[in-house]
Amino acid sequence: MVDITAASTDQAAALALYEQERLGQELHDTLGPQLTAISMLAASLHDRLLSRDARETELASKLLMRIEQAKADTRAISKGLFPVECDAEGLMSALVDLAEETEEMHEVVCRLNCERPVAIADNFTATRLYRIAKEAVHNAVKHGQPHEINIALSNDNALVLKIADDGCGITEHPNISGNGIGIMRHRCEVIGGEFDIRTGVHGGTVVTCKIDERKHNGSKN
Image (cartoon, rainbow, N blue to C red):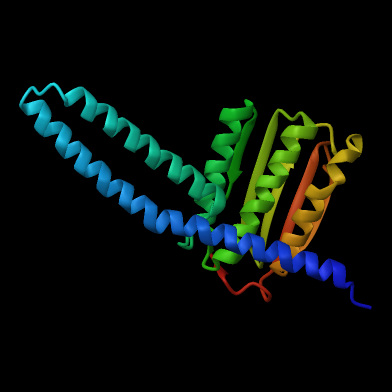
């Protein structure tokens, strides 16, 4: 028997995510270039006023600073809505950024281990893998109190994303098994993957998303 409620919820979630990503792409493709053009004009105005030693130079300088801040804010919002660039190596770049941001914000050692470049041409798949990684890292920081988090990405016969931490482990914090895990599992299944979460051999928590190469035609080494 089909669970109509669950299906409707999944469709609503998928639609919401699509709209979110579309908005992120719009910000990147339209507002971003416009702000860049305005910034260039403001910089030109500032230089001309500076060469004339005009009193308005300071005002132009403040205007330029505000525009640059607006550009940075737009990039941050766009990245939050649409985190993975459309090129094939976008996922690796996004995961590097995630690791660096985690270290900076939470003072936890976090790194990406990717022995060989993993290129994923399908942005739909890449974006969901990124969001799985982000949720797993968030759960680790929030519930596991780890000293180190390792994100691993490989593509040897199967595309595998693995997030492992050295925290207290999933069994010690049952709250971690709430909506976050359900969301990760759903995102993995949507792209044809197998989801697994368990306590690591030496403790901590290991989250794995594995996509069989036969099901995943958008990735390549």
